[in-house]
Length: 88
Image 1 (tube, rainbow, N blue to C red):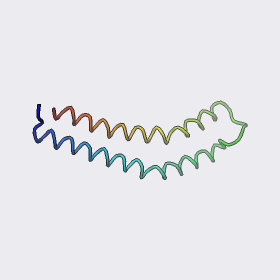
Image 2: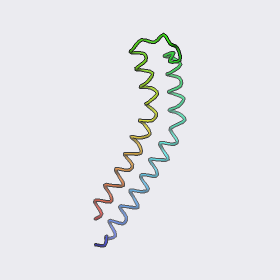
Image 3: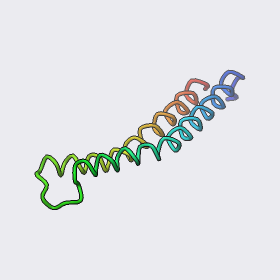
Image 4: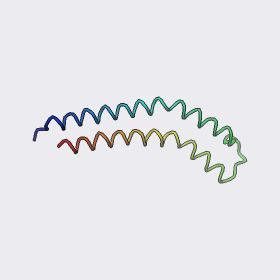
């Protein structure tokens, strides 16, 4: 079953949006890293005298950059997949 022109344009458009979101995520990564480093310094995450809440906050801050990157990339991938399904 061949795609019509609208389906082909949707795929290209979805790939372009995905690439834009990927570049955006990689561009924002140094800014996120400096924010995370500042937050870890403010919370004194390098010390051993942390309460359970402070330790959880430090772990959450460490995971935040990875989660941010994954959410952006999955959003872009969802756009590509939705355009693939809409074009068929």
